Length: 349
Image 1 (cartoon, one colour):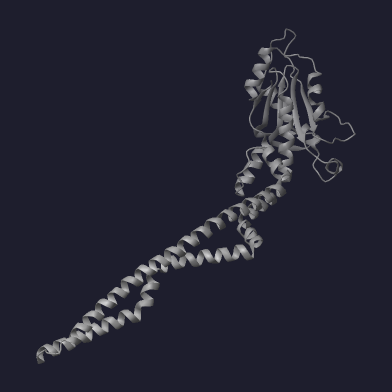
Image 2 (cartoon, rainbow, N blue to C red; image 1 turned 180 degrees about the horizontal axis):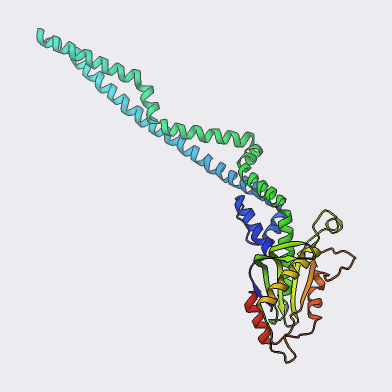
């Protein structure tokens, strides 16, 4: 299996973009593809799960309402019995005072005062009986009211209740789908580059793949052919082999994109990278092992199209479909030794 270094650039960019938007549920491109493919079914799953949760909550609420209603009756009966007992006790004291007619003048005055307060206390109990009972059972009454409201909503508008309860999760799903739609170019690129990596992994360990290969130049190098100064280059995949180096750019384009004149030419892009890499290698890697002199390291330009490619051929660049990739790479005969391969790899990794 080919040796692989670094993560693909479009996957890193996609991960950064998604995380910056608060989307963190995906661990791979496959997860994203599965989500988009199964979006409607996942949305329905949310509704079904919400329905099941509400059904279970309804069942529990009915049981709780029955228990709390019975509990309220029991507490009310006990509290009523206690209050009635206090009233009866006060009334008994009042009756005793009324029966004492042979009291002297001072005792009568004292009894009158005591009778006044007993009557006042007794009437107060009678007048506040309902309020006292309501206050005692108020916490239970509140729970009963809440449960009754839920049961009424469930029984009269079950579907609306399900949709409202699932609304937050549904909105999260729709937001994630919208973010992915906005990132479709990054996703497409990540899918394409991921497929290329999987294909190259099938090669032997004589092949070394560096994903997201970058070089910076300070001072910049001048590319006369394109009349520009090159400060840096970024290559989707740099494949090092005993047959030389392959600069690989991946394009997961539709037929419309392949034929579009508004997109930047990947041919110009890869030839620019080839020139810059050639300059870097010339200045940093020397192969003096051959007795004829310094040995050249071939650098080949390869654009891999995942599904569609142009019918036209171009100078200095080969364009292959994904299924043609490994056969094309293996076509070239080895010209480098194991030692030379390792030397190049150690400089470029």
